[in-house]
Amino acid sequence: MKTISINTSQHVNIDYELATWVDRALAFAIDLFIVGVFLWVMILVFPDSKYIHYIITLPVFLFANLIIEIAYNGQSLGKKMLRIKIVKINSTPLKVSDYIIRWCFRCLDIYGSLGLLASLFVGSSKYHQRLGDMLGATVVIKLNSTKKLSLSDLLRIQSIADYQPIYHQAMRLNEQEVLTIKQVLDDFKTYKNEAHAQLVDDCANKVMALIGLEEHVQDKHVDFLKTVLKDYVVLTR
Image (tube, rainbow, N blue to C red; front, side, top):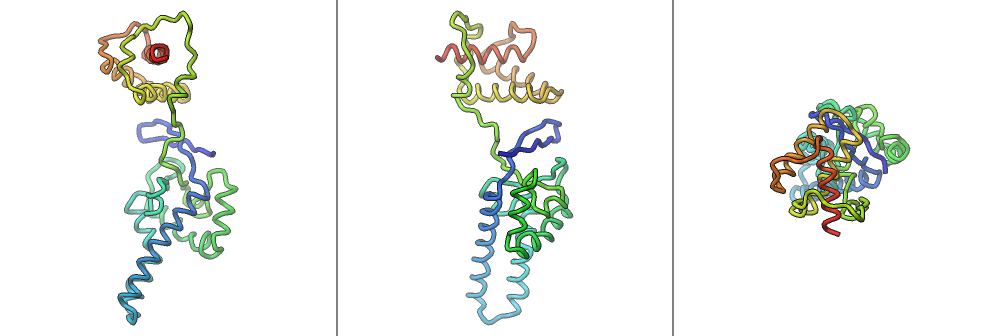
Protein backbone atom coordinates (compact mmCIF):
# COMPACT_ATOMS: atom_id res chain seq x y z
CA MET A 1 0.00 0.00 0.00
CA LYS A 2 1.63 3.25 -1.16
CA THR A 3 0.75 6.56 0.45
CA ILE A 4 1.47 10.22 -0.13
CA SER A 5 1.50 13.03 2.41
CA ILE A 6 -0.64 15.98 1.33
CA ASN A 7 -0.16 19.32 3.12
CA THR A 8 -3.52 21.05 3.57
CA SER A 9 -4.19 24.78 3.46
CA GLN A 10 -3.98 24.72 7.28
CA HIS A 11 -0.42 23.30 6.96
CA VAL A 12 -1.47 19.93 8.32
CA ASN A 13 -0.01 16.82 6.69
CA ILE A 14 -2.55 14.11 5.93
CA ASP A 15 -1.51 10.73 4.57
CA TYR A 16 -3.63 9.42 1.73
CA GLU A 17 -3.47 6.02 0.12
CA LEU A 18 -2.70 6.21 -3.58
CA ALA A 19 -5.30 4.82 -5.94
CA THR A 20 -4.15 1.54 -7.46
CA TRP A 21 -4.23 0.51 -11.10
CA VAL A 22 -7.39 -1.49 -10.33
CA ASP A 23 -9.11 1.55 -8.75
CA ARG A 24 -8.29 3.73 -11.72
CA ALA A 25 -9.20 1.08 -14.29
CA LEU A 26 -12.59 0.53 -12.65
CA ALA A 27 -13.27 4.27 -12.54
CA PHE A 28 -12.35 4.54 -16.22
CA ALA A 29 -14.60 1.59 -17.07
CA ILE A 30 -17.52 3.19 -15.22
CA ASP A 31 -16.97 6.50 -17.03
CA LEU A 32 -16.74 4.72 -20.36
CA PHE A 33 -19.92 2.76 -19.64
CA ILE A 34 -21.86 5.92 -18.75
CA VAL A 35 -20.69 7.69 -21.90
CA GLY A 36 -21.44 4.57 -23.94
CA VAL A 37 -25.00 4.40 -22.62
CA PHE A 38 -25.52 8.07 -23.50
CA LEU A 39 -24.18 7.57 -27.02
CA TRP A 40 -26.34 4.46 -27.49
CA VAL A 41 -29.44 6.41 -26.46
CA MET A 42 -28.54 9.22 -28.86
CA ILE A 43 -28.17 6.75 -31.72
CA LEU A 44 -31.55 5.21 -30.92
CA VAL A 45 -33.27 8.58 -30.70
CA PHE A 46 -31.56 10.07 -33.76
CA PRO A 47 -30.62 7.06 -35.94
CA ASP A 48 -30.29 8.99 -39.21
CA SER A 49 -29.05 12.37 -38.02
CA LYS A 50 -25.32 12.67 -38.66
CA TYR A 51 -25.35 16.31 -37.64
CA ILE A 52 -26.63 15.44 -34.17
CA HIS A 53 -23.87 12.89 -33.82
CA TYR A 54 -21.20 15.39 -34.83
CA ILE A 55 -22.62 18.17 -32.67
CA ILE A 56 -23.46 16.13 -29.56
CA THR A 57 -22.19 12.56 -29.42
CA LEU A 58 -18.62 13.17 -30.62
CA PRO A 59 -17.97 16.11 -28.22
CA VAL A 60 -19.50 14.10 -25.38
CA PHE A 61 -17.18 11.18 -26.07
CA LEU A 62 -14.13 13.44 -26.29
CA PHE A 63 -14.74 16.03 -23.60
CA ALA A 64 -17.30 14.67 -21.09
CA ASN A 65 -14.81 13.36 -18.53
CA LEU A 66 -12.61 16.43 -18.84
CA ILE A 67 -15.52 18.79 -18.16
CA ILE A 68 -16.88 16.66 -15.29
CA GLU A 69 -13.46 16.43 -13.60
CA ILE A 70 -13.06 20.20 -13.81
CA ALA A 71 -16.59 20.79 -12.51
CA TYR A 72 -16.24 18.32 -9.63
CA ASN A 73 -12.72 19.35 -8.60
CA GLY A 74 -10.81 16.29 -9.74
CA GLN A 75 -13.49 13.63 -9.85
CA SER A 76 -15.25 12.05 -12.79
CA LEU A 77 -18.45 10.09 -12.15
CA GLY A 78 -16.46 6.87 -11.91
CA LYS A 79 -13.97 8.44 -9.50
CA LYS A 80 -16.79 9.76 -7.32
CA MET A 81 -18.32 6.30 -7.11
CA LEU A 82 -14.99 4.75 -6.11
CA ARG A 83 -14.04 7.59 -3.76
CA ILE A 84 -10.84 8.53 -5.56
CA LYS A 85 -9.72 11.97 -6.67
CA ILE A 86 -7.07 13.82 -8.68
CA VAL A 87 -4.88 16.19 -6.64
CA LYS A 88 -1.67 18.11 -7.23
CA ILE A 89 1.38 16.38 -5.86
CA ASN A 90 2.56 19.66 -4.27
CA SER A 91 -0.85 20.25 -2.62
CA THR A 92 -1.66 23.37 -4.65
CA PRO A 93 -5.14 23.72 -6.19
CA LEU A 94 -5.67 22.08 -9.56
CA LYS A 95 -5.70 24.41 -12.56
CA VAL A 96 -7.62 23.90 -15.78
CA SER A 97 -4.27 23.44 -17.53
CA ASP A 98 -3.53 20.46 -15.27
CA TYR A 99 -6.74 18.75 -16.36
CA ILE A 100 -6.01 19.50 -20.01
CA ILE A 101 -2.50 18.02 -19.79
CA ARG A 102 -3.89 14.81 -18.29
CA TRP A 103 -6.66 14.73 -20.90
CA CYS A 104 -4.26 15.26 -23.81
CA PHE A 105 -2.02 12.40 -22.77
CA ARG A 106 -5.01 10.13 -22.17
CA CYS A 107 -4.97 9.58 -25.94
CA LEU A 108 -1.45 8.14 -25.65
CA ASP A 109 -1.62 6.55 -22.18
CA ILE A 110 -4.96 4.83 -22.62
CA TYR A 111 -6.53 4.99 -26.08
CA GLY A 112 -3.41 4.84 -28.22
CA SER A 113 -1.88 1.89 -26.37
CA LEU A 114 -5.14 0.22 -25.28
CA GLY A 115 -4.24 1.07 -21.70
CA LEU A 116 -0.85 -0.66 -21.82
CA LEU A 117 1.22 2.47 -21.19
CA ALA A 118 -1.08 3.64 -18.41
CA SER A 119 -0.88 0.23 -16.74
CA LEU A 120 2.89 0.17 -17.05
CA PHE A 121 3.41 3.64 -15.60
CA VAL A 122 0.82 3.34 -12.81
CA GLY A 123 2.17 -0.05 -11.79
CA SER A 124 5.84 0.95 -11.74
CA SER A 125 5.98 4.65 -10.79
CA LYS A 126 6.56 5.86 -7.24
CA TYR A 127 3.19 7.60 -6.94
CA HIS A 128 1.12 5.39 -9.27
CA GLN A 129 1.19 8.06 -11.99
CA ARG A 130 0.53 7.59 -15.66
CA LEU A 131 2.38 9.81 -18.13
CA GLY A 132 -0.33 12.48 -18.02
CA ASP A 133 -0.03 12.62 -14.22
CA MET A 134 3.74 12.98 -14.34
CA LEU A 135 3.60 15.87 -16.80
CA GLY A 136 0.73 17.52 -14.94
CA ALA A 137 2.32 16.88 -11.51
CA THR A 138 -0.85 15.16 -10.28
CA VAL A 139 -1.67 11.98 -8.41
CA VAL A 140 -4.89 10.07 -7.81
CA ILE A 141 -5.65 9.39 -4.15
CA LYS A 142 -8.23 7.46 -2.19
CA LEU A 143 -10.43 9.73 -0.10
CA ASN A 144 -10.95 7.14 2.61
CA SER A 145 -8.46 7.57 5.42
CA THR A 146 -5.53 5.17 5.45
CA LYS A 147 -5.31 5.38 9.21
CA LYS A 148 -8.49 3.63 10.12
CA LEU A 149 -8.53 2.80 13.79
CA SER A 150 -10.70 0.23 15.44
CA LEU A 151 -11.46 -0.61 19.05
CA SER A 152 -8.93 -3.43 18.83
CA ASP A 153 -6.21 -0.84 18.10
CA LEU A 154 -7.21 1.05 21.17
CA LEU A 155 -7.22 -2.02 23.39
CA ARG A 156 -3.61 -2.74 22.45
CA ILE A 157 -2.69 0.05 24.85
CA GLN A 158 -1.16 -1.77 27.78
CA SER A 159 -2.99 -1.29 31.03
CA ILE A 160 -1.28 -1.48 34.42
CA ALA A 161 -2.70 -3.92 36.94
CA ASP A 162 -2.43 -1.49 39.85
CA TYR A 163 -3.23 1.60 37.83
CA GLN A 164 -5.89 3.85 39.32
CA PRO A 165 -7.84 5.88 36.75
CA ILE A 166 -7.64 9.62 37.21
CA TYR A 167 -10.61 10.68 35.08
CA HIS A 168 -13.51 8.33 35.70
CA GLN A 169 -15.54 10.68 33.50
CA ALA A 170 -13.74 9.11 30.54
CA MET A 171 -16.54 6.54 30.61
CA ARG A 172 -18.82 9.21 29.15
CA LEU A 173 -16.94 9.10 25.85
CA ASN A 174 -18.10 6.83 23.07
CA GLU A 175 -15.85 4.61 20.99
CA GLN A 176 -15.62 6.99 18.02
CA GLU A 177 -14.65 9.92 20.25
CA VAL A 178 -11.90 7.88 21.89
CA LEU A 179 -10.59 6.70 18.53
CA THR A 180 -10.50 10.32 17.38
CA ILE A 181 -8.36 11.21 20.41
CA LYS A 182 -5.93 8.43 19.54
CA GLN A 183 -5.82 9.60 15.92
CA VAL A 184 -4.99 13.17 17.01
CA LEU A 185 -2.20 11.92 19.28
CA ASP A 186 -0.79 9.64 16.58
CA ASP A 187 -0.76 12.49 14.06
CA PHE A 188 0.93 14.82 16.55
CA LYS A 189 3.59 12.17 17.23
CA THR A 190 4.28 11.91 13.49
CA TYR A 191 4.02 15.62 12.62
CA LYS A 192 5.18 17.74 15.53
CA ASN A 193 4.34 21.13 14.10
CA GLU A 194 2.34 24.11 15.24
CA ALA A 195 -0.80 23.12 13.35
CA HIS A 196 -0.96 19.67 14.93
CA ALA A 197 -0.16 21.13 18.35
CA GLN A 198 -3.19 23.37 17.92
CA LEU A 199 -5.28 20.32 17.01
CA VAL A 200 -4.17 18.67 20.26
CA ASP A 201 -5.21 21.76 22.23
CA ASP A 202 -8.58 21.92 20.49
CA CYS A 203 -9.13 18.21 21.05
CA ALA A 204 -8.27 18.49 24.75
CA ASN A 205 -10.70 21.38 25.23
CA LYS A 206 -13.41 19.42 23.42
CA VAL A 207 -12.79 16.33 25.57
CA MET A 208 -12.98 18.37 28.76
CA ALA A 209 -16.35 19.71 27.64
CA LEU A 210 -17.59 16.23 26.75
CA ILE A 211 -16.67 14.68 30.10
CA GLY A 212 -17.63 17.71 32.17
CA LEU A 213 -14.20 18.92 33.33
CA GLU A 214 -13.32 22.56 33.85
CA GLU A 215 -9.58 21.81 34.07
CA HIS A 216 -7.20 18.87 34.17
CA VAL A 217 -4.29 17.99 36.43
CA GLN A 218 -1.67 17.46 33.69
CA ASP A 219 0.62 20.30 32.67
CA LYS A 220 0.19 19.53 28.97
CA HIS A 221 -2.84 18.73 26.86
CA VAL A 222 -0.95 15.82 25.32
CA ASP A 223 -0.50 14.20 28.73
CA PHE A 224 -4.15 14.82 29.54
CA LEU A 225 -5.34 13.10 26.37
CA LYS A 226 -3.01 10.14 26.95
CA THR A 227 -4.37 9.76 30.47
CA VAL A 228 -7.95 9.91 29.24
CA LEU A 229 -7.15 7.13 26.76
CA LYS A 230 -5.56 4.97 29.42
CA ASP A 231 -8.44 5.61 31.81
CA TYR A 232 -10.97 4.67 29.16
CA VAL A 233 -9.18 1.40 28.36
CA VAL A 234 -8.81 0.41 32.01
CA LEU A 235 -12.36 1.35 32.97
CA THR A 236 -13.96 -0.45 30.02
CA ARG A 237 -12.02 -3.72 30.30
